Image 1: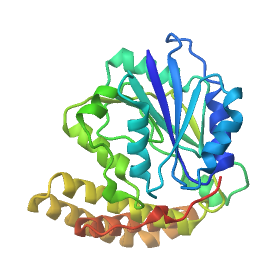
Image 2: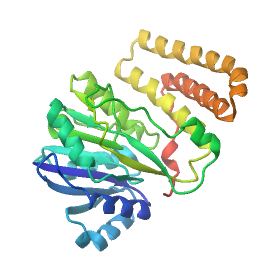
Image 3: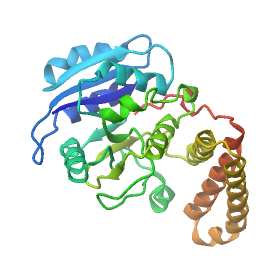
Image 4: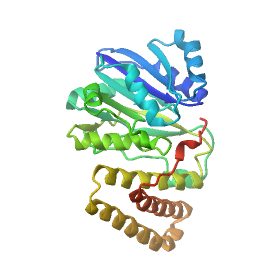
Amino acid sequence: MRVAVCIITCQRPEGLKRLLNGLNQLNFKHCKTPKLEIIVVDNDDHGSACELCQQISSQIQWTLKCYVEPRRGIPFARNKAIACAGKDLDFLAFIDDDEVPQPSWLDELLRVQSLYNADVVSGPVLPYFNQSVPDWITKGKFFERSRYSTGHLLKGAATNNVLIRTEVLQKMEPCFDERLALSGGSDWHFFRRVSHAGYKIVWANDALVDEWIPASRANLVWLLKRSYRLGITESFCEVDLDPSFAVRAICIFKGIRRIIKGTLSIPLSVIWGKHEVFRTLRYIYHSAGMLVGVTGKKYQEYQKIHQV
């Protein structure tokens, strides 16, 4: 079995090094060890990541290749990774450069794929703080994401922890929408298309990766901006995939209803503590983003690079 693990990176040498060291620890107990190669796409036109890959390639047990995508933007780099991986593969996995997989990560993705004959398999991303954070962040579980039982059917996924049958990539070309270069959301847009096309997306609850959360993200301002952007992505994808008046009206109605609900919840959330107040504010920002997304406007979240 041939598998490529794809990494998109930009000016994060320490994060990339941690990730490559983590991939070097992968082991396979449920599946036969695949013919594995790691594809790194450097979205920095100076090619700094490729220099790092060249330096440590001899220490990595898997084939390690690095390419440069000079056009700044996540979907440009993701599409480049798919093209560089080639078509003579069984599966392609994506993982982010601010993450570290647990040793059984890929083995578990492949096991669940085989068990459920899935076209796409997604798994949990667990927050890891290497510095102290405010109490309200841990109380509110602001960096914890939804988890499901293994085999749960999904309507979407993200590229921070995912395995894709290469047949899906070939049938869905072009894959990642380059209109979303710096706004984020091109992965959610792609996997919504995959779901609409009838492909099977399932959850693997034990395919774990740890996401390193930098101090620049562990604060209210970043959380509110992220929620706003996610709201934009949600309604943009819905409208882009079905630009009917009914879908636009539903997104607008949901956004307005949620803003009213969130605003009315503020007095009660004050009673429960700071973390509930901030949770309510995040809910309102997400709802406002849903309204903006209907118009087609975008928020360029990825203009700034957060070091990890």
